[in-house]
Length: 190
Image 1 (cartoon, rainbow, N blue to C red):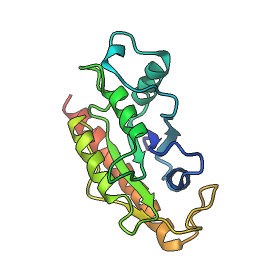
Image 2 (tube, rainbow, N blue to C red):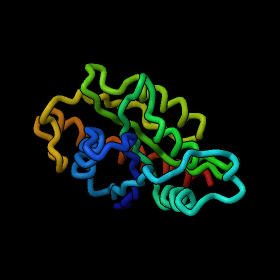
Image 3 (cartoon, rainbow, N blue to C red):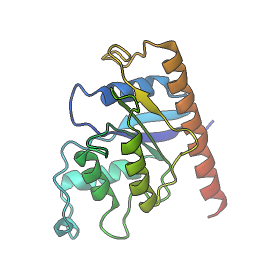
């Protein structure tokens, strides 16, 4: 069985982020066919096309980290009905300069949690639009908007509600199937 390397982004920069807890849970619940690695976004400076001729080392390392994985998973909160600025900044770094978009043909998925009743639905819709422009095949048949309640996920990524744990395990299994399907389709067409 092929193991796919998945890089995941945590959209929140906060150390105690509930989306970081969700990401830790997803790593634990991922099927054996997915090898999960965080791709940090915290140290990236604000993107400007002035850097396009000579990316700083942190941005080159960031783009290389994306190149080294087979797929990407976005774990994002919702800030003001959209994605956090730090996450958008990271996507801008990865997709530039023109012709070097790191997300081209890279299978992706989005998930997020929020204390709000609709989870991160509006932020995810915003991110879908961005990823569509970045030519990233997006898993959209399984959507996940997690309503976070106190104690739902422990600090070490244990899900305390059985139904939620089962849902997240199934979500990761669906993501594995999606990545394999996209990779197979590209292999057959090259």
